[in-house]
Length: 113
Length: 111
Image 1: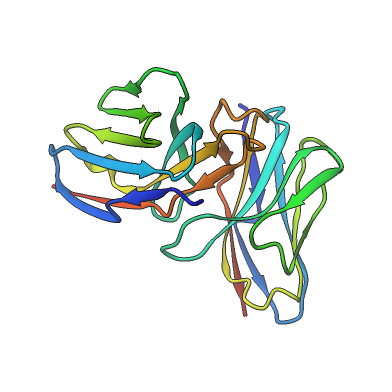
Image 2 (image 1 turned 120 degrees about the horizontal axis):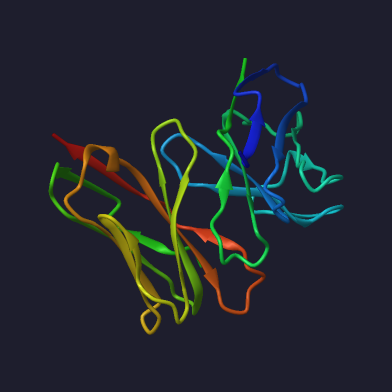
């Protein structure tokens, strides 16, 4: 079955450490997105990519980095520059022209310890 | 630019109806609706395109008023499984097809 796989489901980060969240899709979607969600809040866009080897900053890109070397993969690195990284991270994909909905992965819950 | 959702929260008894609204100050190309249950990822419900028809299936439907740049989500005879937070997302005309999310409407269904 087609879908998006995010891993790990839970991640613990020490102060000053970089961590990478994985996102893989087999839907052949062109566009991929990373969102951050804090408790009781909405979705905030971190980065998005509409084509391989190209990506754009979203509303809250500071302290994060991404790559898009393959169509199927869009990993997110949370760097030590992100001072408050504890949140629920969601990866999504879609067809480029937005006449179809987004498909989300199951999310990664990141906690700073 | 963020669409405005109303109400922010609603509590219903099972079997009652609910309407959730989403409005934009700019011309819209499309409106998306998603439902997110606690601790889970959002799930796509439906999309309404400019010039398209009202969408829906079973007891969940939606409309899109292009003149008012508004969309409404209708939940009829609500079931316990309808509980969650509903988000609308809007795609503006003449944009690069980016989805702009509303703040969400929390729906609680009681038995």
